[in-house]
Image (cartoon, rainbow, N blue to C red; front, side, top):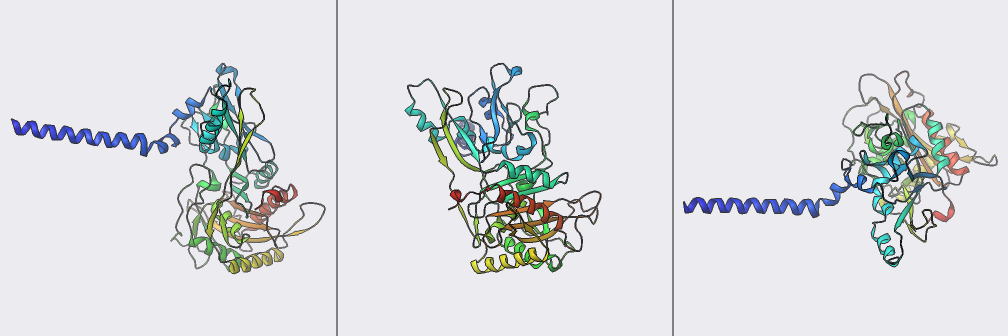
Length: 426
């Protein structure tokens, strides 16, 4: 009898020990990951009804703001004035849908619970108000509109980056979705749990290929990107881990395809314009802290997001040589930009193809990157067009032609609008 009691005691003690370890893991070690998980809607539900900062583009366009919805009494709901245009970047916030995009990755800043804002709130201890943070993005509204218009009704993505800082100037993915329809309490809204289109720009890997027939620059660019296929570390949730080179044969050259996201492609191209150094891409420029006393009071403190070096991708001399070859390919293809005053700006390009992910046909898509101005690039644009169900956009005379023209249009707008002002460059 005594032996059974001892065994039972040991078993109970072991069970309590395992329970204690698991509770400690859930409460401390894995707590942050569970709170930020995309399937966890408790944080989003708790945020509803509380004051929350707005989201603005770099040129002052309001992208997300709280409003008092008549169907929800006095509770504050989020509104997204531009609908699908920024859905994959700004994201959404709803009590049933949860949170995504900037709404999720910068939740503590907008809700006022981030350490910096909470410390500032201590100074207002005796004031009858709280504090929130308004998030200012690096995206330029004019360039974002141009990217969407240039891609048109084709599935794919356009990404524009400042090579010197990693600031994302535009990021459009098609197909998109309407975040207002996802968080709206009205009948007919998108139901929670509905499968939404992924952000083609940074959440999907593609098998990219290039060969000499499409220009040597594309081969060299992919070869450089192949060496470091890790994720970019962008400040948005849901970016997959880096992808290793694909072992399948694409039929477009001797080298196997390189699996990467369009954002990884844009970062690799931008590093060529930055002496071979990769900059970590970021979507938020700064956070402005303000009091909620007047509802729309002016910010009284700001935190700038500093550019971060992500390491050397190309040797400096190799990057310079590759930039020269990309500029030569642009001249051969008669690619030039006229951003303003009729002054032509030289560009540098690299192009290639991608296979149909379904592998049910020989149809291909295309990709292209463009740097401008060619002598000292201040903008890098990557375009990817998925295989079309009706015709082959990849052709033997240069599959990146259409993608290159889309990239040129986006770059031209970025230069014309001075989307990368000199004051923002290091």
